[in-house]
Structure formats: structure tokens, C-alpha cells
Image 1 (cartoon, rainbow, N blue to C red):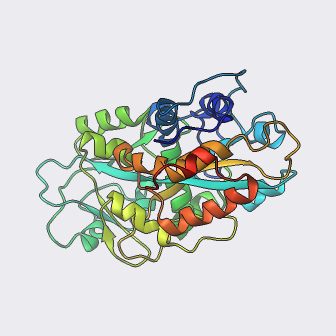
Image 2: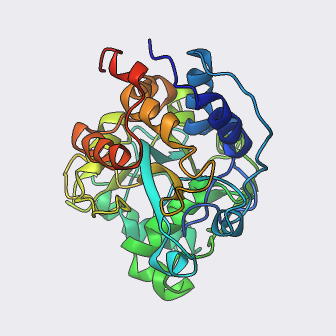
Length: 350
């Protein structure tokens, strides 16, 4: 078992102070409130880390609510389910590192009484539904990609999140990248969440409740929540043209996308035919260019643990562990900042 290094207690205080933050489609720290904080991978992983020996100590560092606290260095790091955009980074003085800690996803859930098949969608069909341009399950456009049987003659009842959730952020960014219809209707870029049409729900549990109560409903939830609660899940066409179901293996396959040097990557167009397209890395973000600050590299001890020992918790928490090539890239980055704690090197690898 890994015994966190001496800097871990102060880091845990920092982590717990910001662990409920989530991102708008532009990336880290741009959302005012965290979504489903007890469902976020980082928050739950931090509890596992604490259980392995870390203790909370030191002053709290404040909550993370916007890009500005990270940009003005009033917080040590940020958590995000999407990378920051070039435009966002250009507004920040200094270099912000993006370190992936796991892979998560958004899933599509539905309520079709009497339907024997699982509905299939393309990005364009999903965009048309989100924009209110496709309103019936028996629409010929849906029938064309669902040849195995008729869909019921029901109106589509979209269910969407009312808050600034990471699920909405990921769905919005996905449609922005994959659907010309969406871009033409709402404009390009991802600095603001663009919510689809539909009845509002405040959390994944509320989405589930409304979907189950509404014949013809279609909603979106965190895949971890969907797997935990056994929700019916639709298939979605990926960049390779295959219709895939959202499994943890399919989420892991999305990481086959080529990663840039700075590890900022959106996985919506991953080339693997098995990839679930609504997948995303979960990142820890922090400045890399101010080592004189006492807590400049505060996240690094936690990140060593998360990459080396914490990956074993991913599947039990409804996430996919990082592929070995990605972990190796992160190891190289972390080693340049701060070598691995000696206690980590005496632990057995995963």
C-alpha cells in the first residue's frame, strides 16, 4: 500500500477544497458550481487516497469557482473534465499544465415502452433533437439508422440538466466538434455551455427520475451513474462510423486518439472503431512556471499516487483507467517537476 509523502496532508486540504468544481466546455475552472460533487471521480479518488494514509491538515485554500482564481493563482490547481482552449490559455499569464487522471463519459438514457431495440443516434440526429428540430421517435431520419425494428410513434421528450454540469459541458463540446447543424445554430467555440432543449433536471438522479416517468424521454447522464443504476443506454455513432454502446472498454478505446505534447485532447473523434465518442479525460490543472511559490507543485504528490496506485479504483468508480502509454507520458511530465516519493517507489506497481 502506498504511503503518501510528507507533503500529502497539505495537498489533501487543497484537493478537498476544490474537488467539487467542474468545467464548462472551455475547460477548467470556468464553471461557477460543481455538478454532482459526490459523483465526480476526483472527489471519490481523493477519499481513497485519504483512506490510504493522508490526513487533512493546514488551512483551507478556498473553493474553485471560475478560471480567474486559477489565473490569479489564488488557488493551487483546478479540476476539469475538458481541457482549456487555446483562447482561454492565451488570457492567462504563465504555463498551465494539464494532467489526466482518468477517463469518464456521458451516456444517453431513454424510455421507450414496448420497444425491443436500443435506439441508435448519429451526431447530426442528436444535434437535431437537442435543437428541437427532430421531435418524434418515428421520424424517418431516425428510422434510417435503426433498421432492426420500428421505433414507437411517440414524441421525443428531451431531458436536460438545469445546472452547469460537466455532462452538459461534454455534450455541448461534442456537438460543437461533430455536428455542422449544431455549430450553424449556436455558433462555434466552447467558452459557454449551450444547453439543449428539454425539461430541466438538477442532477443525474433527477434526470433518471424524469426519464423513467416520461414515455418517449431521452436524457443524458454521467456514465458512472448510469452503470451504477442500470439505466437503459442508447448507441451512438463514432468517428469510425460504428454504432457503439457506452462501456468502460469503449471509453478506454477513446484514448486511442493521438495526444498532443501538452496532453490537452478532446476524444470525441477518436479513430478506434470501438471508441465511445462522448468520452473525456478528467484533468488536474496547475501552473508549472512558479516553483518559488510554497505550494507551486501542490498537486504533484497526489498525481503520483493517482497515476501509480489510484488507477486500480477507476473501474469500481465507473471510470476507465488510463492506458499505459498515457500514464507513461504523465510519469515523464511529473518526474521533470518533482521526482516520485520514495514510498511510492517501494509500492508494487499496478
